[in-house]
Structures are given as structure tokens and as C-alpha cells.
Amino acid sequence: MATSTAVSIDGTNLTLPLVYAVACDGARVRLDDEVRARVRAARDLVERVVRDDQRVYGVTTGFGRLKNVKIAPKDALELQLNLVRSHAAGTGDPLAADATRASMLLRAHSLARGNSGVRVEIIELLLEMLNCGVVPVIPSQGSVGSSGDLAPLAHMALVMVGEGEAWHAGQRTSGAKALDAARLRPLSLSYKEGISLINGTQVMTAIGALSVVRAKNLCKAADIAGAMSLESFLGSVAACDERLNGLRPHPGQARVSANVRRLVRDSAVVASHEGCDRVQDPYSFRCIPVVHGAVRDTLRFVANAVHVEMNSVTDNPIAFPEDGEFVGGGNFHGEPIALAMDYLAIALTELGSISERRSYKLLEGAEGLPPFLTAHHGLCNGFMLAQYTAAALVSESKVLAHPASVDSIPTSAGQEDHNSMGTIAARKCAAVLENIERVVAIELLEAAQALDFRSPLGFGEGTAIAHAALRERVPHLDRDRELSSDIASARDFIRSGELVRAVEARLGEL
Image (cartoon, rainbow, N blue to C red; front, side):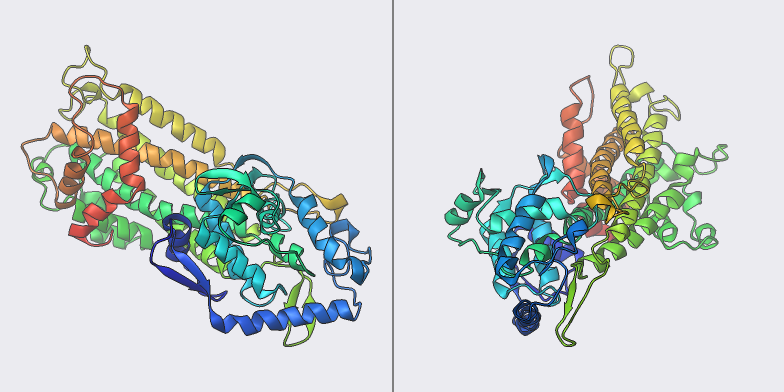
């Protein structure tokens, strides 16, 4: 499954494209040689603490409300295995394989920073599992987002000790069998390694990282679909005037208005109605730069939050070997990702909402277009029900856009009295993203159909490329047929990045 691309991690150098390359494209990963000394220094501190029978949370004490229970050195190893077993209490459908792989990468990357106190072998096993295609089965539900993603990460750690379940070579099997099939040996956990493996925000951050990459592509696809809709609706490009948008200098608004201008450049369809008596277009067309631009600006904020988080140490307690100290804190709390994921879910819902409104307007039979975009209206229903589907997806997304981060339920007998619900926020955001990809796919289908009725007039420089590329996959709807397969094809065309790549090959980056 792995590609020839190799990613070297050092605890500070991950980017969103690198995470995507490992999680989705199977890029191989290795540990940077320079970090090994840092990792060993923190490990030496852990072993010294145990040898000296010092009281350090999670190393020689219990966890959560049991923090005051002193653990004897002879029991400190059993403590770590008990922690992983007891915390593997997740439920629900498993995380997608790409999200799990991203979680593994992020967990290894954080440990590589050299502040967690694990052995180098722990990090290497995680990377070997990634490279050999051993993917733990991680139930998607059960994390409250503090102390990090305890339950999901515990299921990951179980496989490392030869327990739990994993996928390997397409088969779901026991963790022990998956490791054996990959010729890997399970490890016995040593001091602090259990808590270091499960105490962190890697699952919510992994889901968020993959969502950000896909959302960036979706924003570009929405600009393309929106430009095609504007063109086919005989809308005005005036709202994308550089002077106009320069008076409200949000970066996203400037970028989107420039994109639409480039996409419809040299369009004979646009030129055909210059000087017409329509004063202004509906908001869903006129406000494309404003709404799409605001979504892009939101995405920029979220991408930064995710980038910082995936290069952070979110363990507890944290080792500072240079000072010979452990410091307990709250780096495991998922609030930065919880808020960011809720924000992105809201923004993507708005992207879908305005897209659906354009789809609706294209079906009204206005501006010379036939009702429901079928020449045989009455006998045929055209895209009538595709708009129903878009409306349902947008409505569902509005429900999912309710923020998870405003909720908190105390855990661990009140010791952990404020939780982020960040993993719920990330999962909801991913569900919204799935919905809105389909909503934009429906607009793309309708806009292409509407442009068909504008022939033989020539289309814009970018919209012509998008139209032709879509028509290679989905033919014009002449008579009624099952539309679900068309929607699936258009959605795959968007999600794969093929639509954006085809247009950017001519116009440059959108």
C-alpha cells in the first residue's frame, strides 16, 4: 500500500499535505535520527523517578480521581497495562482507516518530541505498523476530548501490546494476528508508556487535519460550480469587480472574486447579455465572493489551529529532561480543536446552503432555461429531485452544525470537570463535509446542464474546462434516469481533486 515517498518526523515538522500523504496515499514514515537522543533523555528521567520512588502522576500514582493512590515501583508496569485495557471502552462504528492512520502518525510524532518519556521502541512500533499496513480498529465514539482522546487511543495502544483488533491486508483480525502477519512483535509497556500513548488529542486532530485538506479542495470546487451557475443563469460578474471587493478587504473575498473573474473570462455567454435590464442578481449569485470568501477565511483559521496542534505535545505529565522535572498541566484538553472543528462545520454548512439556493434558482425556468433543466418538462422531471436531495443534505448539516464544544459533562468522579467534546466536534465536521461535497456535486451537475442549453455560445476559460471534464464522466440529461449514480460520479470527481486539477492546470491555483 505504501508509496515510494518517505516522510521523516521529528516532532515539529508535520504539515497537512504530509499527514494526508501518509494517511491516504500510504507514504512511508521514519523517525528522524536526531530526535533519538531527546527521546532517550526523557526516558532516563522516567526511570530515575521510578528508581527513586518519587510521586509522579500516572507513573507512580493512579489516574484521574485516583491520583492520590501511591503505586509501588513493583506494580508500576502493571499500572500501565491496566490503564490501556480499562480505557479501551469505546463503542460505535470504527474510525475510517485514513483517520486511524493519521491518528497513529500524530501520536508517534508527538512522542518524538522527547517530552513524553517513552522508549524509542514505542515510536518505532507505531511507525512500523503504519508502514506495514496494520491499522487498529478504533471505535469512533467514547471520547469527551479531555484528557485527550483516551478511549480511542487506548484501542490503538491495545494492538501494540498484541491485544485488541486490527485490519491487515484487508482482513479484520486480532491485534496479535495482525502484528504477526506483518512480522512485527508486540511490546510490553514500561513505566509511563500507557498514559503517554493514550493522553493526547491525536484522534480529533487527525480527523480535523484530513477534513481541512478536503475542505480546501471543496472550496475551490464550489467556486467553479458557482461560476458555472452564474454564467448559465445569465448573472452579472459585476459583483466580482476588483474595485468593489477591494473596499471590503477580507482575503477570502478577494480570492473568490478573482477566481470567478478568471473562470468566466472570455465567456460568450456572459457577453451575450451585457446591457440587459436586469438590475441585480439574487443573493446566492451576487454574494458568492462574500460567502465563499468568509468560508475560506474560516478555513484558514482552522488550518492554522490544526497545524499547531499536530506539532504539539499533548501528554500529561510532561517531562523536561534538561531540568530533571515533570510538569503536570492541561495540554491534553481539546478545546483548540473543538472550537475550530465547530467553526469549520458551521462554515461548510453555509457553503452548502448558498450552493443549494443556486441549484434551486436554476430549476425555476427563468432566463430562458427550461423548468427543472429538461427540454421535455412535464413528461420528464429533470433535476427536480436532485434539489430535494441537496435541501435534505443542507438541512441535516444545519443540525450537525450545532457546536459540540459548548457542552461539557464531568468525568472521573468530578476530577475532570470540564471536557471539550472535541472529537465529537471533529466527527460532526467530517459528516458535514461529506454532505456538502454532495451538495456542490448537485450544483455542478445542474450548472453543466444549464450551460448545455446556452450552446453554441462559448463558455468561460475555466468553466469550459470544468464542463468538458464533467461531461467525460456524466452525459447530458436528455430523458429521466436514476440520478443517484450521476451525483455519486460528480461527487467523486470533486473529492478526488480531478475537477480542481483540471481547471488549475489552465488557470493556475484557485
